[in-house]
Amino acid sequence: MLAWHICSTKLDVLLLAAAEKVCYQQYDCASRLLKQCDYMSSTTALREKIERETGKPSSKGLRRKPLFNIDEAMMCPNPTALACHGELSFCQITQFVGIQAIIENVIEAKRIHIIDLAIRNGVQWTVLMQALTSRYECPPELLKTTIVATDAKHLIEGTGKRLLSFTQSLGIHFAFKIVMVSNLLDLKEDLFELDAKERVAVYATFAFRSMLAMPNRIENIMRVIRVINPCLMVVSEIEANHNSPIFVNRLIEFFSSSLHTLIDSNLHET
Image 1: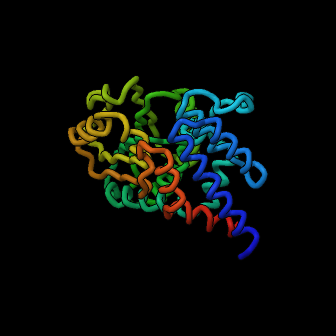
Image 2 (image 1 turned 180 degrees about the vertical axis):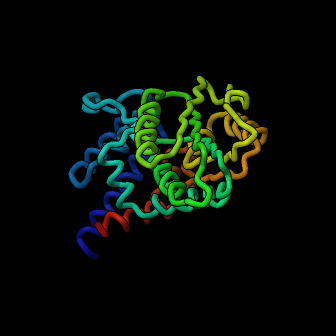
Image 3 (image 1 turned 45 degrees about the vertical axis):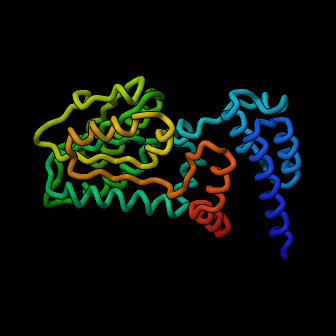
């Protein structure tokens, strides 16, 4: 067996043992196991997971670094996120398939309204905008994007400004709206500025993964969407049980999922 295979196997055993200790709330023991992993690999992500599970640092040494909010990080056009998007082909494939489905359903529309439930850095809409500019026979009069969110309004506004600048370079009339609610249970259809002449499409990429543990959120969103009655709804989610209430099960599910395999393959190629 190759040396890196042996190292990888040891890491798997240590990480699973640490995850099991987290399940039993034996955080000091889990931290000691993670220290052993430090000699072979970085375990920052799992340590932060312990902190999110407990609401406090898992050891004194972890107090030096604040918790990492991945959802907020994905809203910023940082070089790391953009580099990952460029290198991980399955991310682009997921976006292209969804955007192509929208294009096919709004091909003849003069006014297009996109409702995005998780915009992140908005790079997916640059693909749609470029596709619309090549539609010489039926250019849109208006492309409107409405973002549904509960926090990070300043980051979403920054994304809107970048998209507006991009559309101006393409000559597209663009409108950017934010529907900000404190709780998704407060989401109502009358919060959306709808026009009978618009062709509406809903885009939800990895938007529901964090709602499964929150009662009635998804049900309320789907109720609102049914009332709006869009021509299309695009949903992309990871096919993995990453919302299990048991931490070790979520960890095992991720390592055995096709997502982990794809990430591993892409990183080895680069």
